[in-house]
Every structure is written in structure tokens, then in C-alpha cells.
Image (cartoon, rainbow, N blue to C red):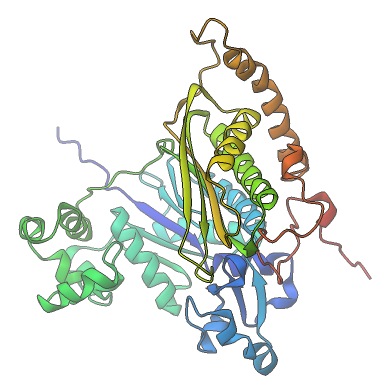
Length: 435
């Protein structure tokens, strides 16, 4: 008796113009109006609504080049609010997980879902995901479904490009001839992983569409380019090569760095900036249940510094691994003492936690008179308490005194157009007018 394996059915669901959509959720007055979200320090456009795209605003357009559109066309501008976007992303991913236990969170606004074996059609499932996400959190989504991850990406692209599909495209039931016809509508440069560098090389070889790539010999592609491109071609042909990363591996390093909003000259300001970055990096470290045994600290001058460029850095190995913010702060402040040079116009600094390993709560054998191991153990419960308080009441509600900012500091990002933290700060909740 032959047992036929049920064909796989993979969906890619993502939020449309996600950052902009997050801004509109609790500011509905911006619906149907052109809106852009700016990058760190209000540098350039990193998200645009369809109305903003219609004004000719390109991705990455510098703010100073588009600011005249505020007066001319009523352009709405928002500084990036990653606390808001991260919180709404968690809510959105939670909704997606209700449709399958097999989920790969690919980015802040994208998720792969394994819908194989479910009785509903792919389109029915896609519409259900789309409608529930809109009703529950107000985020518009697009859903692409295919028999492989790459075909799901292609389907998602078509769902956005073809209005008649209403944001849901299912390629999984198509036979090969119908699939080739669909893939002819997708330029090879729009295929997942191809991009602007590889696209022209493929064009020169007569490979212009996703269908052309799918019908190219994978062995030849591997010899001429790479195994990655060969796998992409196989996936386009319906041969699964990429598994869902349902349990992503912990990061091998945790970094927190930032370009400053204004120039920083004093050691005190640098110390405060590095303390803030260290605190955030330690929170991320504990979130993935890891510990670090080496810390990399750097400070850099900017392009407008009068004099030769300066980049000071130091890697500090730790005697014992730790995840304690307090212990890491001591290490970082010690490193700053060694790399700081007066008279420099500093523009960027950062902290990177290296040599990560799973957190071990049990005591380790140390030096006879060392107190570091016992301190780390006593800090563990304190760090847990701090994390729980900040999770409940909002980020940075409680923390080391060295991170407290009593006045606007030059190292803080420029965020002149930042919306309130509607969903993560009790003091910034949206106010409803029932009149």
C-alpha cells in the first residue's frame, strides 16, 4: 500500500508598511494620509505608506530632501519608535501562532507558518489570518502561500502587487505549467536572496524572471555561483531545501550601539551612554538565558572631528561568565577609563557581549579568595526582579543610577517626531474621547 506524503504548504505573512501601520493603529486620524517613519536620529525614510510612495518618496530618502512635502502635501512624519513596533510585533506574532504551532519569526514584521495538513484551502486560511490580525490589532497584512519558503516569498510579493488578490496569494495548488506562468510575472531581482548585485549577472546570462531561474540547472548554478542560488532555484521549482527555523539558535553575541544625536566631548556623557547600552545589552542577554565571558567596548570620533579620526576600543575577558548588569557596568567603566581621550568629538559608542554560553546558575570553581562567583549568584535574583518590573511597568522604569538622565543628553537620539509609547508606558496610554 502506497502512502502519499501530503504536500507541504508554507505561508509567509507580513505587516504592510509595518512601522507606518503601527503609527496608525492608535492615531487613526492619519489613515489615508501620506506618512513616513524616519531612521535613528531622524536621518532618512525607512517606512512609507502607499500615499507617501505616490508622492515620489523613495526608501532611504534623507529627511531634509522631503521635509518640504509636509507643507505642500500634508506629509505626516514620525521618528522611529521601536518600543511601540516591538510590542505590536509580539501581538501580531501571537495571532499568527494561533493558526499553527510551527512558526518561524523571520523579522519584526514577517513570519513563516507551516500550514500543511490543515483541511481549509490556503486562500481560506490566508484570509482568516488577515482578517483576525486586522480585527484584533488593526495591522493590515499580506499572505503568500507556497510549497516552499521561497515560493511563499514569491506569493507574498504577488499578493502585494496584484490588487485583485486582496492581499492573499496561494501558489501551493498550482501544477508546474500554471506555476511557471505565475513565476513569469516576477522579475529575478525580486526573488528572495537575489537582490541588486546578483540580478544584473543573471540578466546577462538570459535569466530574467523567477520562471527562468526555476528552470535553470541547479548543478550549473552551484558551479557558476553558489549552493545558495542553486537551492533558491530548486525551491522555486517546488523542491524544499530550507526548513522552518522554529527554534532559532541563541545569538552568538549581543551588541548595543548608537550614533549620537549630537557631538559628545565629555567622559561623563560617554559613561552615561555606555551605561545605558550595557544595561540594554544585559537585558537582551538574560532574555535568551545566556551569559558572557568577554566584553568589547568602543568609542569613535565623527566625520566632523577636527584632527585625525580616533577609534578607541578594548576587549575585556572576564574571570567568570556573568549576566549581571552591575558586574558588566564595572567592566565597561574600567574600559572607558583606558580608551577615553580628551578633546575628541565623539559620534558613536557601543558595547558588545562576546563568548556567550547558556546561563549556569550553579557555582563554578574559582580562585580561592574570589568573590565574583558569589556576587554573580546574588545578582541573579536582583536582575530577575528588575526585568520583571520593567516588563510590567515599562522599559527603564528602574535601573542603575548611572543610566538616569536628568537632562537632555547629547548622546541621545534625535527623535523630534516620536509618537507616545501607547502600549508600553502607563503614563502614555491613548485617551479615548467618548463625546
